[in-house]
Length: 299
Image (cartoon, rainbow, N blue to C red):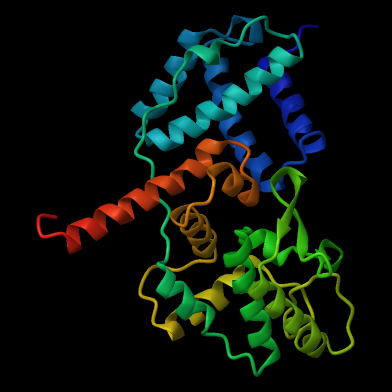
């Protein structure tokens, strides 16, 4: 019995989970997007994957736009379908990939929000390090700004991933891919201070593999960290919209502003595609434009 589009989508989702190690949230997003494509194929009686052509993909994207979906949403839908068709090509289910001839819907790329260096310094100085929680918060903030780690990577950091002798971390990023991240001197010192004087006081004899823990002895979560960053930003007088990732964005932008190589920043951030990293060069250029406008007599 021939395999249908629906059957192959199910197999692809299993592949993403078992072979690629994607998170449940990512799998759910792929499932939702590919479910829309499966519905389209059902409506067009395209049960055989070999019959899917470029015209079908264009019509699928067009219908998403006609339904009032943004270019960004339609592009995400198409990216999911592209991945699925690439899988079918690898499995020799289809001879050619029709999505190679379909461009993504054009969309305005949203620039990430960043703090300037003075705002970063104010935020990093905000934790009260005379308390265990302050030592923890200081170490977390310094780590993100020094390494560009994601908030999820910070809260999921385990003791076995920390090598203070060599001053580096083994970070597990998206798709369980591991990368080596060097620690700066300040981040190393604040992490040592937290591990020496803060973590044990928070655990109170309880066991945890997590580097960063709460007063109840559990591992920090993204939600915990977001609350911490928000409170500290308010205390520091930072007026911009704040969230944990803003320090990651600031890390990348400030590195490039000080002459770092784009490929180096890409490796530190754990980006697979350098085009993802290139957005920070746009942030830097926008900052220069604003500076020129405010400071130049003919700006």
